[in-house]
Structure formats: structure tokens, C-alpha cells
Amino acid sequence: MKKEEIEKIKILNFNYELPDERIAKYPLDKRDDSRILIYDNHSISSSLFFNLAYFIPQNSLMIFNNTRVIHARLIFRKPTGASIEVFCLSPCYPAEYNLNFQQKKGCSWYCMIGNSKRWKDDVMSMTLFSDKEIVLTAKKIGIKNNDTIVEFNWNDDSYSFSEILEIAGKLPIPPYLNRDSEEKDDFTYQTVYSSVDGSVAAPTAGLHFTDEVFQKLHDKGIKTDEVTLHVGAGTFKPVKSEIIGEHDMHTEFISVSKDTIKELRDNKGKLIVVGTTSTRTIESLYFIGKKLETNPSAQLNQLTVSQWDPYEDNGINISPQKALQNILDYLENNNMESLISATQIMIAPGYKFAYCDAIITNFHQPQSTLLLLISAFVGDDWKKIYNYALSNGFRFLSYGDSSLLWKA
Image (cartoon, rainbow, N blue to C red; front, top):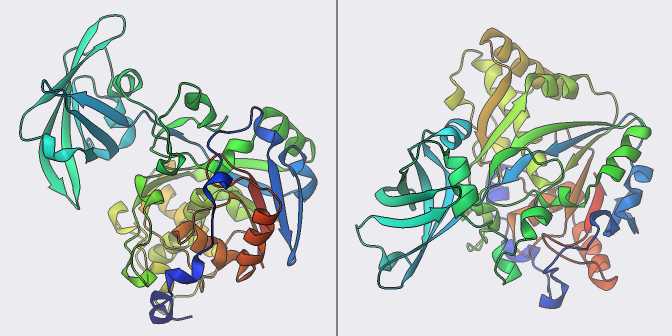
């Protein structure tokens, strides 16, 4: 399909009725007791997630997103009693996540502001109590792309911003759960392998994995590797336009190590990608490799994958392995151990997958870009899959059950 045809796809074609009682408000007590729907060669079956290794071929490679959800919601209270929510979306200065988290007295972030009309131009503050009393202040210093730039400062340089968020912030659980975050969400809304701070939403397909599941995969000779995509709040952004061409995808930070890219290049087995975030990361590598085909000395900021890159016909056709080799050559020539970039990729019906043989993913909201991705992968069978899940008691969305989808 041409770009013009894809842009005209109507989001209403990706609607289904999701009763509120089918949305899992809480996870199961044991992660791998969840159910998994298996879609393979147009047929559907189901099992328990604990049995996942049975459905994955030997010598497969599985890719996970190791991002960790941060305590991104900061609630400030004004002397009048009004509460203002400052939701940290992504770092502004320093712009690099690790550097920003390591700051000892101040930094700035792109934020979404709740009850913004009550926050004029004054500096807000809150007092935190850890080993000692700390005062955290927040000041608006600008606006960019509808996000407010907020400068944070605190009066004790023995604390990093990462530690300040951990003490002062709340974990942001999805809005469709219609409840406040609870203490146990700090554990249940993180994958067991999460390690890199930065997300404001969990890569929820990974929430089902346990040490026991990993052991069974490794015992079968299935390899595992990790990438990083920091999930932004835009993942919950509904498509409000009638056609997808009028929807702006959110941009997200990605990081893939040189060793992982080599593993992908040399992989001879099936590639199973855990979650839509890992899928967007892995598939973005192809378009970064294409950019390097014509501009091998590009600056990093020229390698960002835009929303419509997959659908632009620029006459360049290279193999998926050549794209990965181009990235490896680039990293080698620039003495870099990881590719750090960003992606705005929209995967919709008509998209041609470069790498993924199967995707493990939860059941997504109606009329969402995540459902578009699933449709791109399995075609119109997404309706059959979702009808089966609804008819057979599967639990939906972030804390719900999952599916293993083989490419149609």
C-alpha cells in the first residue's frame, strides 16, 4: 500500500466493544498464572503463560524492553489548598535520561500539568522527608509542542533527581484503570527484568514473565536479549481523527547495544518480540539502517525515525541484515557501544515487517495505534482474535492476559 492509501485508513474500522468489567483493574497474584492466547496459521488456542516455552521453537531469539517506570507524577499543593499535578514526560535539560537522573540540584523536564489554571507564574514547592528534610521547587520556564517545560530545584545535593522522584513522586498507572496507584503497583507494574529508568508506562506484555518462565525458555535453548524504549504518555493517546493520517504519533527514546544488533544480524532462528514497544524499537532499526545507506556519516539527530518513514518510497531497498550491518559500521566508526536515537514510527495495515516473526502482547484499547500495529501483523484476523478473547473470558489491557501472535 502507498502512503496516501495508509493515511486514509479510518480508525473506526478498528473499534470493538470493550465492557468495563473486562478491563483488569488489578493483576493476578502470580504473574505467570495469566492466560495466553496462541494465534498460529489462522487458528486460535489458549494456555497458561507458565507454559509459554512450549509454544516457542528451539533456537529462537526473544527481545525484551528493559525500561523501568519512574515515579513521574508529582502532586504539589498550593497555600490555597489547590493541588497541581506535574507529570514528568521526558527530560529537557540535560536531555539525556541518565544525565538528567544524576543531577544533584536542578534539572528541567517536559511535563503535562493537571489543574494548570490554578498554577500561575509562581514557584511551587513541597517538603520531602527522607533521612532529612528536603525542599523541592517547580517553576514553569516555557512551552514546547503543548508540553510545559518545568525547572526543578532542591536544596540538598546529596540527592539525585532519580532519588527525588522516588521519594516525592507517584507511579503513573494507566488512566483507564480508574483508580489511584497503590503501594503494590510499585512492584506489579514493573517487569521483573526492568532496569533502565525512564518510562511513564510499563511495557505490559513483559508483566507476565517470571524467573520460572525464563528458566524454562533457557532450558529449551531459547536466547533472550534486551532493548530500551522509554514508553511515553502518548501510548494512551486516543486517535481522535477520523483517518490515521491526521494523527500525530508520539516520539520515544530508544537504545540498542552493539551486541544486541550483532545478535539480531546473526540470528538464524525465529525472532519473538515481547511487546509493541520492543516491536517499534526493533522495526525502527531497519529505517535507521536505510538512512545510513545513503548517509553513512549522519549525525545522531538525523537518524530519528519519523511517523511516515516506513511508507516513503525513496527508491532504497536493502535487506534487513544489511540495515543492521550499516548500524554496526556506524557504531564502530564512531566508537559507540550503543545506538541511542528516537522513534515516532507508526505501524499500521500496509506496513511490511522487517524482523518480527511473532509478537507477545496484551489486548489493547479500541481505536488505538497499538491495535493498528496488531492489525498490520495479523491482518483482519485481529477481529477473530479479539472476539475469541472476549468470548472466552480473557482479561484486557495493562493488567490483563496476553497473546502470542505469529505473523500471518
